[in-house]
Amino acid sequence: MNSGFRVSVPATTANIGPGFDCLGAALTRYNGFTFAPLTTADSLQIEVQGPDQDRVTTDASNLAYVAFQKFFQKINQPIPALSLRIELDVPLARGMGSSSTAIVGGILGANAMAGNPLDATALAELATAIEGHPDNVVPALLGGCRLATVDDAGTATICEVAWHSEIVPILMVPAFEIATAKAREVLPSSYSRTDAVYTLGHLGLLLQALATGNGDWLRTAIGDRIHEPYRKSLIPGYDAVTQAALAAGAYGVTISGAGPTLLALGSADQAAAIATAMTTAWQQAGVEVIDAQPLAIDTTGATVTRLNSI
Image (cartoon, rainbow, N blue to C red):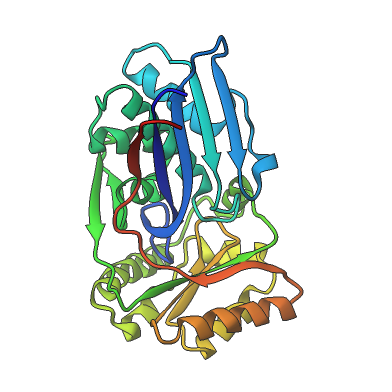
């Protein structure tokens, strides 16, 4: 097969308590996407490997290929015939940004095959336009923890948020799923001024807590009144798992993305104990845990590697 490109895209955790739809961080877990031109008469060949491979479409509806097409439409060039191989390691529909890995992977693969006509800012804007909001796609693309917002004209501003090395993200992935649409449906259409002010203050404190590693601030800052009180009703055992994590030394627990994965934040020396306590509590609540592990913040973001032969 002709030379191509391999794109590695990190998983993400988004919202992070009061950072609803604007704050996300890249994690050290990855999906891989290998792009190569097709020399056969076919216009598209897709192969998927890894957990959940049978649930990923291999036709033109594949999300990575949809993003690939949208890139070429944006630059007004014909869509080339494509061989795409996808290697999955980020769980689907669990609140860890699996759809964002596909979107970022698709546009980066297309950008590489087109000779890199778009810079990081343009790629972030395109990814956000496809996804609908920036909190997952921006950290998946750029790495680190990122705060993203738009002005009244719709122009995005992205800033990096310092994440202290002593704060460890612990991801707990249950066996059940929550569709993002369902997680959106449970949210109210309006909020009180009290809840808005509460969440604004907590977001400001969260940014300082993450930057300084101040656990006392973090215990308070993780609180939210925009999405968490409503979405936790979709997660059996949420309260028991949260209490177990806090008892084991966690600074706080929040829903990762739209859920049902839970994100605990703790110190490095307590991370393993927190993961064990949360797993036990969820199992006692009758929920199977398919993955439970401390991760780290990916500071690189998506990477593109040219392959001489694949």
